[in-house]
Length: 133
Image (cartoon, rainbow, N blue to C red; front, side, top):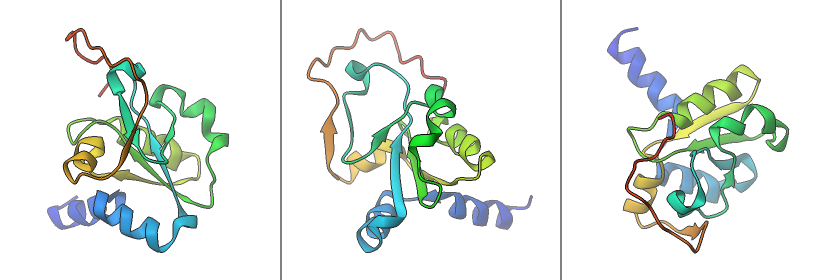
């Protein structure tokens, strides 16, 4: 794959937070947003408003919760995290239309887009997140 093919494929496989918000506003019936981060709510703390929470380690067993007629937009922690890409592969192999939200929750929050709390008890021991990123 040359650079041109790579960048075209990358653009086809991802949506920016702004691109997602615009597409969802224009055609809300076409998209489902899914948080695939792995870890307890105390570490995750929050999620994007209206996102389903299906951790990567549960995606195979919970695919029936996702509509095949919609584009499934997956997100994880940040640009360095690969959980959303791994989930996208599983969904694409099973006939879903899946994309990754580029930059994950970190990019969403940088743009000051709305999130909602997952847990009121937000404590972290500093031992790192064991997520499989």
